[in-house]
Image: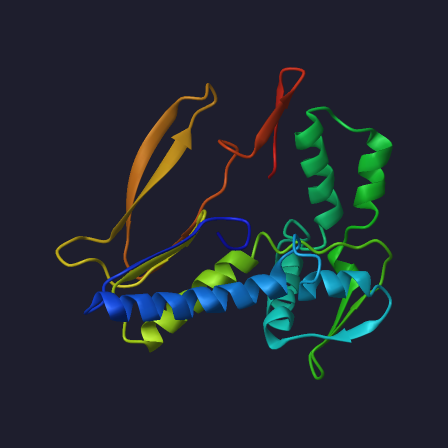
Length: 228
């Protein structure tokens, strides 16, 4: 388990001992990234940044890279993608845990602390400034994909040509297993009545990201609310 999900590696290596060494190197790197990006770990670099509201903080290359990409996506999607949504995400987690809807005032208060325009980036010095009090960054929509990319980069650097990496619904494949069209992934399509229709996809030198409410949801007064 890393980044709050099960992190899977599947790959072909010439020997078990080589495979063990490669896997340890990959998981060590993923653990490093978890210490940077996690919003669950109190002492992660991300949470230290969030506690430093109003102060300009020099951050690691990895964190600055992810925040820069996030800002680009926020602009392109007009805010549909927004890593400052942490207060809203925590609102959702509280609703799910208590299994009851919170007040509209609480929701509005959480939303008042959200907005990608409240992050200022200085690319020359890798400096980040959070301009509004109570901000909480949540990299759940991008950090796992970043970690999957890093894992595959290490695998390729170590001569592994046929590999599959998955962090929950974020997946990346290089060359296919011998004699197969690709790495087989089953995706569950769900209709409006809750019927599940499994669909097989074969990945080869491709990435796939999925998300849905088949697991991340809560029902309150007959209505279904999802994390999305």
